[in-house]
Length: 313
Image (cartoon, rainbow, N blue to C red; front, top):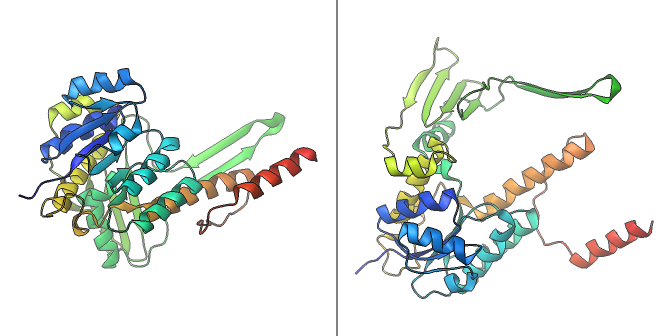
């Protein structure tokens, strides 16, 4: 009989409180829960009716009924657990790494175990509006992608006052999430969970896709305070895709790549972290900085020697 893999969940925050019922609704069994303290783990385990809980990572990773590990913990801890889980033979769904070095180590592990699932939980990639947007971009709906009118700059005023000016269409108030792709032939706008488009020849934008997915009231109560609606919907679609990926497999550790083809890989995670670090570097230098994706792990001894030399100076 074909079975979905048992799941081990790392984390006790809002994401875990939403993810656990979503996984169960799709037929997954939650076999183990990890919290940073025994008390935190126990509290959520009792609330979510999870029989096994612990504050020791190996207790989850070595659990014989756990074949899929979902990691929703602070980034500095993600790499260690994700890499170890892959090494033990577990499929991994996790959040972003803390640094490019951590992301690179995760990529290395994923390449070493290519048959295991290793994806980053960027849930918006699973929203149909974003899937449709990607499809339309590839079909040249917007033509050659250019840029929208956007301006951000800083001014150093007299007496050392620093003024930051951002000119865009963001308004104060409720949470707004909008992604606009502008091209030579038109534009696409993912506004919340709906997709709009407008050709240059059109007088007004058109609704290309509307998302009517209902979200369980209980999930809204658990997560809406901390997780915006479109991210909740993204989590729903992601978990549905996970079920489709595993449900027809004879072995609980094998999976079909097609249902999660839109997911962010560990390679994507490394690139995203490289972009973030380039932004930080640009902020320090005040100049354009190239996004450099790590191809080999830095020599820790070399970094230590350079630090010591700077201190001696």
